[in-house]
Length: 592
Ligand SMILES: Nc1ncnc2c1ncn2[C@@H]1O[C@H](COP(=O)(O)OP(=O)(O)OP(=O)(O)O)[C@@H](O)[C@H]1O
Image (cartoon, helix red, strand yellow):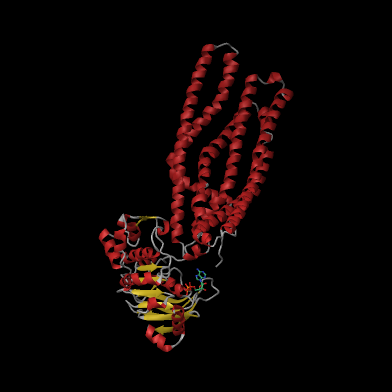
């Protein structure tokens, strides 16, 4: 499995710009009513803005030159009402679109988040959290403008451009042709720019993602950075990433900035051609002042939306890279999923068996090789062995965080692949070294183990693991607010809360993976009763480097070289004088 870090750019699977754009726009279909109203308002505004130059032409050619004051007054009042309605319409349109776009972003974010939750650990193992965050937050935000401008710019501006061109050709074909003569050259230039700038924007997104990943990692590890006085080193890395990010941005906008100049030039060329054709070719007598003025307005009305359209095009090119990244995650298949035929596993008794199980993370190096064992309900099994031997891997296969390549993992005689993941994991309690606590009160953190737990159940759990006393002594007791990762509590207290959280879920199978390794031996002794309460009456797997913590285990498995090399009670294994005995004597020697 390849791991992508902040040092490397992510590879995004190419899907095609048009496909990505259509997929993004498909979210608009859920808002047909709102969009119909917006399009109606837009059509009205276009009609008003198209009529305006005609009103000016009418006022100059028929009323001002004829000295018809009354007619001019009526025309001005009519124009005023139309334009006020247009302003009101624009405001309403902006409000509706803001609401629609925000709802779509919410939907996309929910879809992405729900999908990410279904992805297996392999997905999270292979990329930094900061890069996932970049997609959920930054990349999705970038889609907002595209969605908004599709409705408010693309549709009306395209309609305006077509309508203005038609009116111009109907009114005076030679002047119209002259005014728009530079259009084809402009179109070719804009296409060339987008072709090259898409790649630059993709690069910019990747650099943003690298920066995000680094910042996230840096903040999470701030304590280590400060304790190793590595601030200078991390600042240098940050600067490098920041510089790469800025450079990629400059490269991308440099190309895009050229677009405005090309349109300005084409616009100017159109005006020059209009006057040249009108004055030199057709002759001043052939074209009235009103027509010239009207054409002057129409040219503005033609090139302005063209400028908007090119900006929108630019925006699509800029943000399509973000959309590609969002959809790529949505299309990442969940590796560990329920098959169509799975059933709910009934209340688990706790018999766990491995039958000729082999497993590798990367399909090449076997971590487990032909492992078989059977655990009786209620047994406590300790897994010991050298670092990297495969202890965590064994428990990860029991809770089906990964699927075995060969053999069968079964619980109560059922293959874990044949039962629903939800029904399986909801009956398991998994505690690792990282007792992650969320921002919220102590009560909320414990309730995470069983969302509908009553206050009585929570207190029962905290009493069982001996956490109730210290919680009661806190000023706000169970309502004490914890900051991110449980800041404000000692390691032992966090541990007790994590025990209580697991206890309240009343798991049938319990996994303690180095759950007490972050606390000192003294604290461990204090919470031993809590641990004993947790283990009581349920099948448990305890992984611990500190052998003193697993003395009461019913059986100890010594894991090494891809399998179980020794098995028995602590006393039996010491008497055997094998691998466990060596580990045990080494630790005893360290202790004295
Ligand atoms: N997500 C992963 N992707 C790839 N390889 C992994 C992954 N997790 C573990 N490994 C590798 O699998 C082997 C077994 O790892 P495992 O975590 O099961 O060992 P362990 O016995 O629990 O080690 P420790 O006592 O240090 O926690 C190691 O060589 C490790 O490098």
